[in-house]
Length: 578
Image 1 (tube, one colour):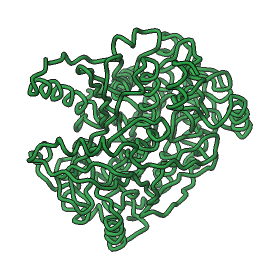
Image 2 (cartoon, helix red, strand yellow):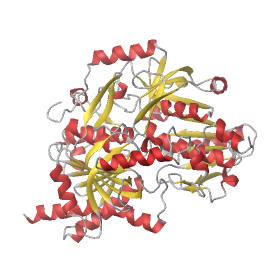
Image 3 (spheres, helix red, strand yellow):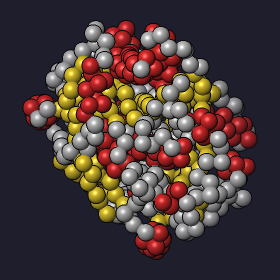
Image 4 (cartoon, helix red, strand yellow):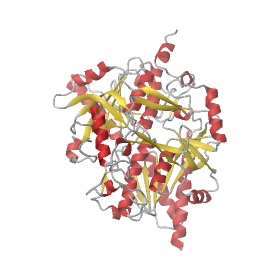
């Protein structure tokens, strides 16, 4: 066996990806035509964390830590694009944001693993995820180093789907000595413990919280009993990414550690009650009575709370438009303002609202434009906080939600806008799979108000091709969508993939993305009309990689924005005229 093929075999790196003339790490803004060896050849650690702000802060702290050990201070360099992830290089360390939830992290890990293999460091590199978590019987401020990750069904495995088939991958730590070395080097003033980590695909009900938007199917007593049961089983913290991290790294044979500080002891409550300084250091809409009973409800990820005058900010809102990236959210708000003018309406001022660490929110008259990150879990956190906000300010009976974004086409040409009629999951079922206290529930994912969708289509600009169809949403950008250009060797062939996509097309699926199932499932429970409007960037029957030019992609990206902004502006103009 040749030297070059050894790492690929040992680390299960996909031969399909390695055979590409140029592999585009699309979400990182890098590709193999670049001199990646010069940038990454000396890297020993990839340190991954949720937010771009934290990634930049870590890189700066890392540089100073080198100096404290008598080493030269490395220059901190920003690498790649920043629309999805933010990456910084500090000597032999890469600091990179991964967003929220396993699906978002999984995309990053695929592209990083391929990069590590390409530049020849995959045998030596180590990965660390650092972040925040909820404690399970440990005090806020305790750092938990994971020994084993368990999923929200309380199984020590990562549940992954390929061509509709479910696989369970073990999630034990690959190299416990690596974890022990991290603990041994910890500063004496920081409490550090080892323990199991539970990772849920949901910040609220999946973690047994009662402060989410919707009424859970369990009681406060059920919740406490569940958390005690987890603690007795050795779980010391709860977050959203460790299962994906450990499962992927088991397959890729990459040593990984998960190092997370706790912000709250879940045996004592759900909401974070520490001060900002300490942190730096039911009804028709099924809105939860637990959340409504809170003296002050903190919409933590939005940077808003019910002690603020939210009525003044959100009382006139008619549409919440959600999309993946902060850049697109800001762009949509500006386009929306101009669309109002084109319909003879006054131009609203675009205002940024809340904090920007997790989501970026902009107000443009009666429209809120907000980023949701990548994957159902990240979107689900946003929807919970937005639904509670809508209920609090009294607009939940009238507001409509729209997700716009990009997708892979299923038998339609790149640049086609698909308006979803039904969302199906990666097991090809029309349901949203959600877990509460370890129990699985399946929620229907039909569109609640088809007239809403039809009205969007009817108002679309004539130069934009728009179709209706089913949308398949996967918890994975690569194997879950039947791609062969991910990092790891899939358990299917190219022929299997093509047959699978043809089968989906014959069943009425017209595009593939990662969020529609969560959107439609949540909105079915909350009884909020929602639409999913996504442009296709590639026809998956013809390939996996995006081959359109940058100019074509920029044009395609405008299509879903124009369709939605034109619909809202024309609707508002008609309302004003009457």
